[in-house]
Image (cartoon, rainbow, N blue to C red):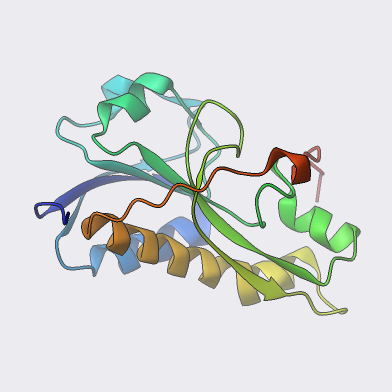
Length: 181
């Protein structure tokens, strides 16, 4: 069942992905961005989230979203991760794709839970990795625009009452440590 307009969202993030996601989501009819939070803070508490929030959207987020903050929103929280979850959980997913010379990767929008990059998948799409790619070229050519598209697609689906939640297959999960790049 479609949601009543407007969908009230809080955007948490930083850098180019958050900026581009902001403008793309702001352009959607029936969506009101009620607050923007730079994720340079260490954690987001329930007090940080405005009342009557429907959804938290994380775009290049490094802050810990406390359970009370997620629970305060009617629909919870979604986040973009630049890998085909459950592969490459962790903060250096793109770098690990390059380091492992993987020919295919992608992006995932998932519903945040208490784990790190472990929540149910809302949307996912693959892309190809060129042999000449670096983490930076792959990010800017493929994964950043893919992240914006997937976030917009997910918000549009949520507006229509579609809240896909495909559990991640733990037998394929990997966790890689953060790399200094």
